[in-house]
Length: 162
Length: 178
Image (cartoon, rainbow over all chains, first blue to last red; front, side, top):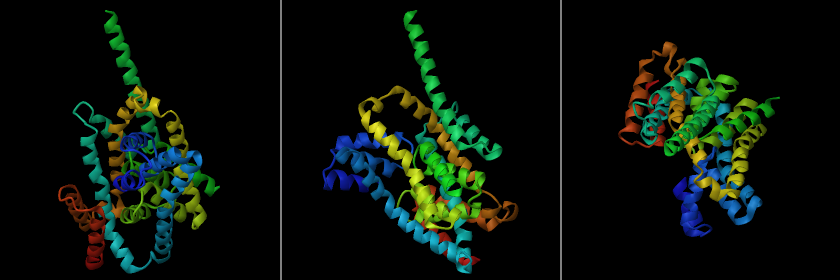
């Protein structure tokens, strides 16, 4: 969705400059939530403040909302249809594969090494086997990231004093 | 109260959904299937298929879809969708105010570094939880399902087949073989 947003917002309408847009992407990616929605809120806010942010958020949400609502309505109504059941029976294992693929692609992006590979394995196991909520895992990981940083800063400041 | 729970649940998902659509899925699955049992595993997997095939972000799609299935009406969809977007709205406005400070803040940066490896594990857990009897037959022993899984995995990972095309192919295969 990013290239689409960039074309509209930067190239066609010239609402934000390329550099501003890049900053917005970084912020939108760092924050939780849906990337496209986050960016649209930033663009709207830049142009017209809170009101702008509100209408942009609405605009980027509404099409999905309507399309999915139509789908959900018909699927709920016709889910007993044999043809649909046959299709979904084969589609489901394929979808599980589609979810599994990013695990391997993201491992590269996360720069996992033999020293850090235990982190995703442990978190997956805690959720899958022990039923720990992913929210807890996210929370702990974020705090741990900060603690590691503080510890390193503390250690390097002591080394400087020596 | 179901509507309040829907709102609250999707607010949590929006608040803790770091790292894009794929990273949001495990949260959605955990909350909706494992925790609240608003969706069966079958319904969840079907929903992911529909989300992949329709345009728009998967976070919105799943909120709308799950809200509808859980409540049986449009209001449930609305409440869930507002819930998932609201944290973004609040957080982005705050960030925009402190734009320059947040951009290179070392603590924000360190927290994100801590999250990155964990997100991989989260998605792996989602895939593992879906390898169940509802998707892979009794005792997960339906070998046809596993063949479909393996082919779809190879096709999307190495042959770069587009996910939408993959789902369409699987649907046609299902019509023929079952």
